[in-house]
Amino acid sequence: MVSFLQIDNLTKRFGDLVLYESISLGVAQGQKIGLIARNGAGKTTLLNIISGKESAEEGNITFRGDLRVGYLEQSPSYPEDLTVLQACFYSQNEMVRLIAEYEAALLSNETEVLERLLPRMEHEKAWDYERKAKQILSQLKITDFGQKVGTLSGGQLKRVALANILILEPELILLDEPTNHLDLEMIEWLEDYLKRSTISLLMVTHDRYFLDEVCNEIIEIDNKQIYSYKGNYSYYLDKRAERMEAAQAAIDHASNLYRKELDWMRRQPQARATKAKYRIDAFYELEKKAKQKKDDKNVSLNVKEPYIGSKIFDAEHVSKSFGDLKIVEDFNYTFARYEKLGIVGDNGTGKSTFIKMLTGEIQPDSGRFNIGETVCFGYYSQNGLQFDEKMKVIDVVQEIAEYVTLGNGKSLSVSQFLNHFLFTPEKQHSYVYKLSGGEQRRLYLCTVLMNNPNFLILDEPTNDLDIATLNVLEEYLADFKGCVIIVSHDRYFMDKVVDHLFVFHGNADIRDYPGNYTEYRLRKTQREKEESIKTGNGPASGPDNQYLSSGKQNCRQSSDKKKLTYKEQKELESLDMEIPELEKEKKIIEEALSGGTLSIDELNEKSARIGDLINEIEEKTMRWLELSE
Image 1 (cartoon, one colour):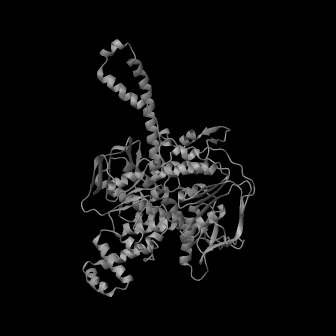
Image 2 (cartoon, rainbow, N blue to C red):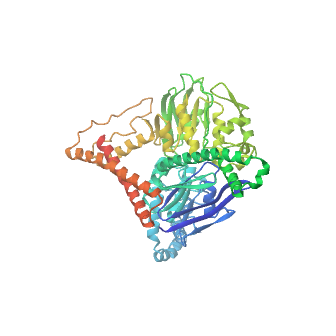
Image 3 (cartoon, helix red, strand yellow):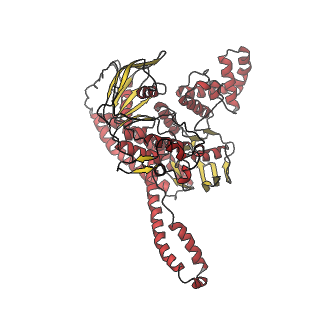
């Protein structure tokens, strides 16, 4: 297996804070690695060190010669006066610069420049490269090449940056939270693109479905060290649990032995000289191990259970538009007590505007929202991080309240409450500007929840939060005795929390779908397949079958199920036997890959086979679902 990147004995510190110490890892051809760690553990810093944007105290980083490397930063930026096209081709690659120059001349109709560039385009065989580039741009829905970068939304800018990377056709990509600010359609496109491509990856992401589908190895930074798991995210969860259990068992064993050795060390001081030096040295090593603490704490969100009345809110004939762009039109809805609603849709379809109308930040053009008297909103917005960075963490929270009431009638001081959110005393008295992006998001979540709201509105809450925080937030929301509205592109998060979805299609087309996102997506995929084989029979039934407009919910019932043919029945029976066998083979290969006993040739062979298996299982499962329906 060809090595693309090798990191040896890397150490990084910020003052007294040690992020990692003498860590080593490598990325080989074909590897797709997901990097996981808690907020503040140095995930983005590691990518910056690899890309050369930051330096490390110790260690070596070696790339294969002439390797093409792309780096998608978490918050990409370009000069604001560039056009979208110029930003897409913003690169030192000579071919890309030639195509960018040609496209700019074409847009401005500069005939003389075009005549000068055409021979170079022919000589460099740039036409095929340009065709591939435009194909990527169109798949990413980048069509207005003349729009200025400074006018782009976060999602549009992320797509431009992604295009900028993919156009270079890199062999290795470093991705820092690639799904942030992308809508679901773009996330699924990128997921499919990376799964099918031969590009090697080193990626930081909190999107657990994305990790599961794309990555064939997970690397975890924990306690300043690196732990590697040869499998996808689901495999990592199983093996990490085993590692934590083994680590705790080792600590317990060391603690028992430490008590015996401590008794030996405490015997008469005059006998100390006769004690073997090797045993004394071993005692101090044992003491370190015995006093280790299993640092597997989670965020605790056990605040006071809020009361909420029976009336939540009614939307009455609400309409809103910006020029020709309609957000909602004659919208009517009655929100129920304890309802948990997810809102999904492409960027620019009005999801955030809808939320802002509900909370009163934006007024509708006509109609109104009638809010219940007992409703107390807790609003976590995309742009809510507006802390004074020169303030200390504890001061930010104390400005809201000195104490937080818990559900058991007790209360916590602000310091105790922050400790539950994994802010150590040192972090609490540190300045906000020293926090990582994820730690600032966690602080913001803390300030929202400490007011004990009974109606939570979370607009893209998963961006920049680590997976440990997301897991506990999901559990909290599942048990939350209030109302919840979530706008999110995190499919896993939505599946765990919501009861039903509003799907925003744009132009005031909002449809209600019962169930979680995965159920919606499966039905949508099935409907699209049905539509592709129908000829003139009208639109097929699908997930978007409940309209919310003019105060009515018009439900189109799916056509009567037809009986399976004999051939289809035999196919279904065959799939019932084939899928478990494929899953069994996949599990065997995963265990072999994690065993550490395979040769390089065997690793290559089994890595290729597991990719084929995953695709085959997905295809057969989808066909099984079609026949079962």
